[in-house]
Image 1 (cartoon, rainbow, N blue to C red):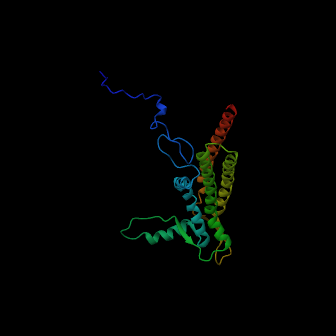
Image 2 (image 1 turned 90 degrees about the vertical axis):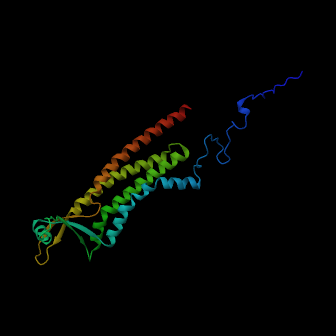
Image 3 (image 1 turned 90 degrees about the horizontal axis):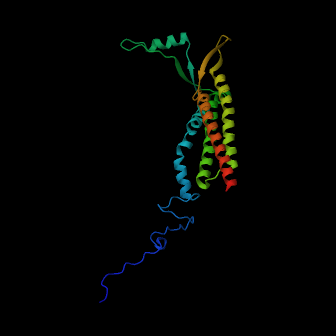
Length: 237
């Protein structure tokens, strides 16, 4: 009597199962078990990186825009002395209104000279240029590491240059802020000079630059340590 039970097919080697065999990507030649991401170096990959680093490129835009505005229509913030402060405060000390104190006013220079424009715009433009250089260095390194997974000497030099220029730029910014904070003007009709404290947008950029300098210096050391470790690993392999 023939056997009525159906024979179970031999599955054999699981690697022979076409459903369990990972598929090879036609674009990159690699297998992807959990879907395929963007191919490094492709146009869509670059656009995704641009979106990811959008804030990195927006940061230098604010001081550069302010600097360009200061070149066209320069404005300064003048800190008032006791006499001027009392005169302005009398205007705002009205019945029924709480007492207020005006300590500084914003002055627009209607007929600025070239020196006035450069002094008003200098800190903002310099600060924006330093941020732009740092953004480029970080962008370049992240793009190369994401695409190749390797440390390159050129990227290390770019990051080191950004760290050095931040440190030098901090000294220039500090000098510019000190020069701007003491604004000498000829008193009309008297021939004498008086000293008043003047501020411009981003006139405290040296403090922010000093913090960014410390952060970039640490990132530079981390990158160089990773590059040395990667080089030793390649030698060992």
